[in-house]
Amino acid sequence: MIEDVLSQPHQLGDALWRVEAAGIPGRERAGGLVVCGMGGSAAGGDLAVAAIGARATRPVRTVRGYSPEPWLTPDTLVLCASYSGRTEETLACFEAAGKVGAQRVALTTGGPLADRAREEGVPVIGVPSGMQPRASVIYMTVAALECAALCGAAPALREEIEAAGATLEDLGVHSEPDDIARALQDTLPVVHGAEATTAPARRWKNQLNENSKVAAFASELPEANHNEIEGWRWGHDHAPLSAVFLTADAQHPRVKRRIELTAGLLEGQGVPVVRAGARGESAVAQVLSLVMLGDLVSVRLAELAGAAPEPVVYIEGFKDALGSP
Image (cartoon, rainbow, N blue to C red; front, side, top):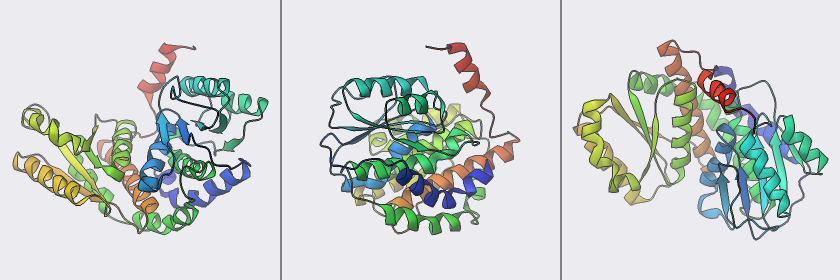
């Protein structure tokens, strides 16, 4: 797992090439982009939205479930992302999007999704096999960014994607992931994001669940200031909670003020608090730097706990119990 995380800087160029090789026709679509996926395969949609930010010119949405947005029209591009190609929710969305005549793109290593896409003449973006689905986050994010550009939902961010590699390379040799992992050891982390860092916060939560095998939760500011902070004292009395705050340069000044006040409030109640800042010059680099930092922290925390990051016994067991649709 650590090898897959450290290879993220080198995956950027390969991901761009794979999107280009799929031969996706580009034209502006009023309906924008819908990314359908689950788990690590859906993360790319959220992270693309975070990196695009205020530069979006059309809707860009992520759907986690069996049905795409009810407003879906033929003038929408639908990216169906499933690393295995067997995710039943994504396959259902693929069929539903086809019924309304929306242009579709499949993002997968193969499986039924690739088979159905090729049968129906739908472009397929191939993803390298042999890794855990959650480790393919760069491929999922780059594909979503490129599809957003192809349908006119956002400007082309290829230069930012290519330049982000240097930022990620530097992060791979930094001591920050070890320091954060030690601070979170034996705690129940709540990872806070705001604006562009909300999607990375969700990624941190998911990676702590799957790689570190710990309970973890994600929260969003400023919403948490209107409800969640009222329960922290009780929570800290009943569980070994810790708080992580993900920051970025472009956050609204009032959001930055909220982060500091919230962190200070929790520190005053004895809660361990970690602040982690995005790196890089561009929005793409900052979002991806927080993703890689969280991935490194999750693997390091697994190591400290003596846990193996790759097996997901309960997820696989649940799928077996659920059975085929």
